[in-house]
Image (cartoon, rainbow, N blue to C red; front, top):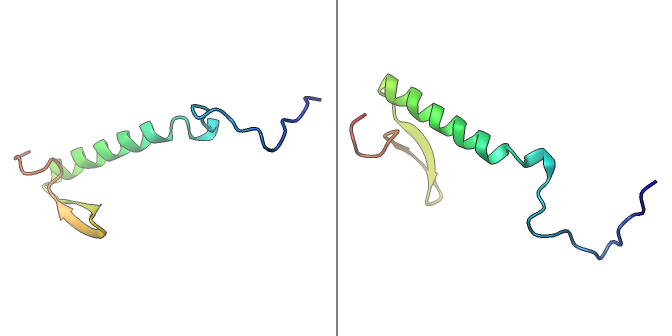
Length: 64
């Protein structure tokens, strides 16, 4: 059995929870896929901006 660390000992800042290591990358891939799908269909996407939900073009003002 491994000895336990004292409760007051902190983990290094760079230590990440193994369950969440790939979560940020997965969310970015999902967001890009949603933008591509919305652009292909000619739809806007909903984003949270300045405390409100707003509808915007998938890739900003430029035409897709």
